Length: 327
Image (cartoon, rainbow, N blue to C red; front, side):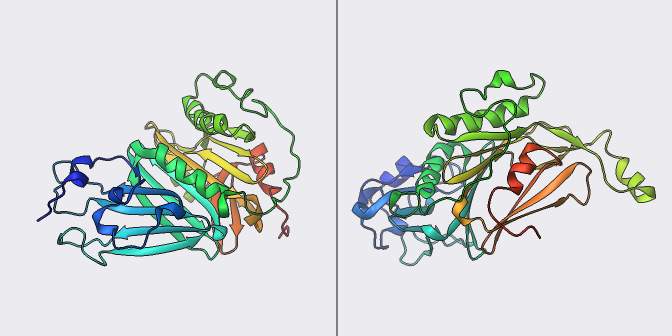
């Protein structure tokens, strides 16, 4: 029987910041945690309705702890049968050194949010959250962005200069008015960039592209079969925007780069890569669709995949975004 119902009373879909020991969910209170030594602590609720939540159950899926050099993620053990709340050892612990983080990808489709933290050894630490709490997750990304000790880690590698084209080089020039009024997908992607750029005026937009309908690459009978569904259910390469500052490359776009059909796309994604971690960039034609290039950004054993229009400024910029062998 739980005598303190404050955790249950405060439960909701939002991601909350932990300021005091009483804010720590009961499940995780046996974990040694000195709040004075943390930069940020967030608790992520379970994906259950208020009706399903009771004072006797564990209500928080994750506890995220950012310290000077370390990210710690405590995650509730999931089982078919609910067990008493706050049981010792009812969670698993994962830790990542901040200097080993080579990319962070945040993806939201309406209320379905996912955060992926990529490490140099090729590992991925992933967690889900309610998309309504994205602002708090962006706060976490900002802390991870600054690296160990709360400062940008390491000197960035310079990006080779690329000719800037419309809509401009900075947030003040990159406005909704600069986009095609018929392409609202571009408007949403650019709005995501502007929201970040207002907080980071040194984040410069280098290239963007709108939605583009793609055509199958195959020819002959097989190609004809692939072409058949396209008039009614085309494949669209979604809009994206590339930006950088002195230390990071950022890509704003959609959760899925290639989307089949004509349904509205409401998703949003933000990919963040420290320039110091980039080891190699590979680009090759998409094997299925014309005028689309698949770009792989490699940092250690981690591989991040993008698809951009062939010959676009985005492709040229990515090709020169670090020093690497051309093979």
